[in-house]
Amino acid sequence: MKILGISPLDKDSSASLVEDGRVLFAAGEERFNRVKQTSGFPRRAIEAALNATGTDPDEIDIVAYPFLEWDKEAELIQDALQAEDKWMAGFTPPDLAPILHRAQDRVPARAGLVHGLRTPEQRKEKGWLKELFHSLGGSNEQVSRAMAQQASSEWALQAREDHRRWSEELQAGLAELGLSKKLKRAEHHLSHAANAYIASGFERALIVTLDGYGSGLAGSVSIGENGKIRRLHNLRFPHSLGSFYESVTSSLGFHPDRHAGKIVGLAAFGDPQVLAEALLSRVDFLEDGDFHIYQNLNVHFSRHLAARFPMIDVAAAWQYVLEVLAARLVRYWVRKTGCGSVVLSGGVTANVKMNQRLHEIEEVERTFVYPNMGDGGCGTGLALLWSAKGRVLPTYDNVYFGPGYTPAEIEAELQRAGLRYERPDDLVGEIARRVHAGEVIGRFGGRMEYGPRALGNRTILYHAREPEVNQWLNKRLGRTEFMPFAPVTLWEAREKCYVNLEGAEHAAEFMTITFDCTEFMRTNCPAAVHVDGTARPQLIRREVNPEYHAILSAYEKLSGIPCLINTSFNMHEEPIVCSPRDAVRAFLLGHLDGLAIGPFYVPHPERGVGRESKALAAAH
Image (cartoon, rainbow, N blue to C red; front, side, top):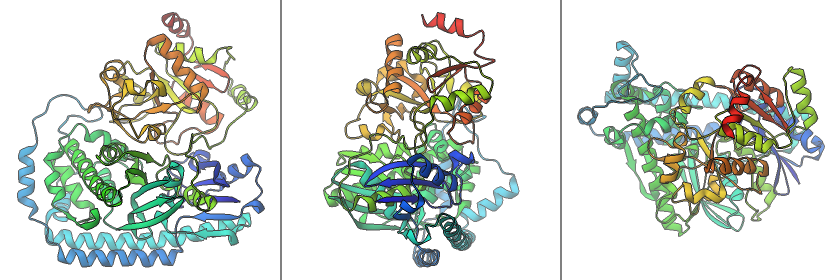
């Protein structure tokens, strides 16, 4: 049975092809049209899936889509917001004014530097008129309640229209392929639960999904057992950790759908206790580990705090409360079910620091995070669920599910671009020597990674000995980041570099969780260690990606260090590269020193000339 999985069309539109429980192909539309987080019908991704697998549309048995009919979704939205109105009418938050005065007294005096900010005390200054508006809308009880209700109403109207529009586009796109009659829909959080559980390979697991919105919900708790999924609890929208975090991301001046990772990094510089009381005062802690968040869709509250308090303290408070609420939920259900194997999915579980806190819960024995945890992985989840037919499937060994290119295709592109290139007898050694000597090398090889992380095949490599790389390389690539670059680490050296890995090693193969670093790591790889002493590693095994593992092994022989910096091969606000043409473009624009592409090595026409002999001499 072949199942075509299509993710929600609202953002990060993706397509996957699954046959008998095995993912044959999966990729996001953005990789083909080069528009970050593309919405709409994923025509190019579907075409790529069919071409790569030699599949005719007539061979597709089911098209899986992780939302219900648009009118049913509209009903669920209305029900959720009516329940919110009823709850808010009975909830009286404490007076915010004295809480914020106490918070002001807790702001510490600071010196030093936070790269990306003018000063550690930087606030989001918006002008006195806007700040007054946010102050009234965020802290004046009467005004803020009215604005919160208005925000919920406006969100509902827009969401209803979006579901209708995307449903029409889905039907039109499927009609072009002759697949309209094969469409099968499901509730959104089932798709998240399915991808986390089935891809984990666990026979029995507690399944926790957390996101912004999906079919009236903001999350779910299920038990997966012997290949079947049983729902235990629903977290109602709009009491959403996704919406909660989106509000602070937006209020601190970043794109709420793309830049949540910047808030995670920024938070480590701040003091969460400055504003923790203010945030927790708006939380109603319920039974079943659940919670309600007062005025969660009212962005004026977070914007008021962002204007009044240092950005780093605002970020720290939101990250802390996210961790508190998520950990309380998971701890309750682990204890209730007696299940210490936890699997996670949903956009919120892209928060690698939160995932670390969940893994550190005493009763949690194993943790797995679905590698494409956001909505881009939902179509794959349903396809796996319906393809598995109640079987427990093997876990993912890798997620190299995208397109690959032949040496002939790659060489033709290099010739078209007029680039000088060679085909070294020992490309692995060439890369290792150059990186050891201080060159920045792009690597393009094998099939493209599925999901948001670069996992070696569409990657930029550099040594991790130089902490300043986080500034100058980000500047070269046009990025602004508060997190350090992530390291790739030899599987064999994992315990030499990180602590408390047990039970989460497999999750770390997909770069979905942080760990505290050892003294060896802090001393030898400072560029990969955050200010809080953690890193988000990719652990690489020889059998998963032999050439990538060999590069690291060769580098370790030269340096004694089993880690390299691994950052995504792309320019700022562009998707990770997909094709040889994408790679050549990003290589030239990013002024990398070299490009290892397929079996070929390409020096940069400006940076590589004159540096090669010096670099290789230093390596020897």
